[in-house]
Length: 176
Image (tube, rainbow, N blue to C red; front, side):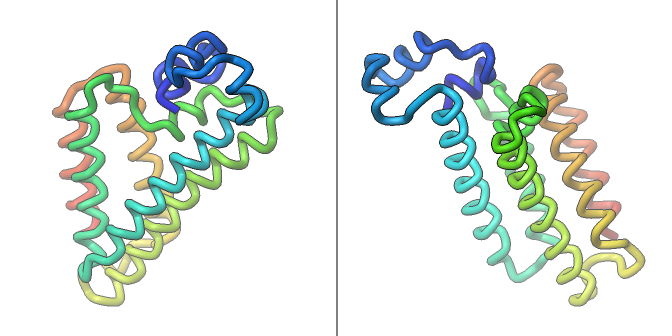
């Protein structure tokens, strides 16, 4: 996953995978099939990690705090990540061949999971009186998902922590 994450699908050669995994090409092909299938498996693995994180955030009794914890996690991750690779799904969404329906669907489904997390938390927060009742939960969830994607792209190419902090601050203001 790290080889694809750092270099993208097209930029990752079999030699890169051999070096990263410590396996010979034959073993990689025998265990994972071709490069495309291995890439798909890494996307599934990353999505499982994200689902685990979202499930943990949802245990917070405060839906508003769960959303803010998401942005705190993202901000900390972008600051502390040693190689500033960004988000694997966001990076993959920018690179994936739109003709590869299976990969495209996997990437989009992963992004949808984050959007649904935001939608659930916004609705629950509105019911609890923690989040402005006048917000459209669906549209706001899409907005937050877009902010996450944009922040991840910005952090990769322009690691200005002020931008990242501004995004989190404005999310807090938006929620009320």
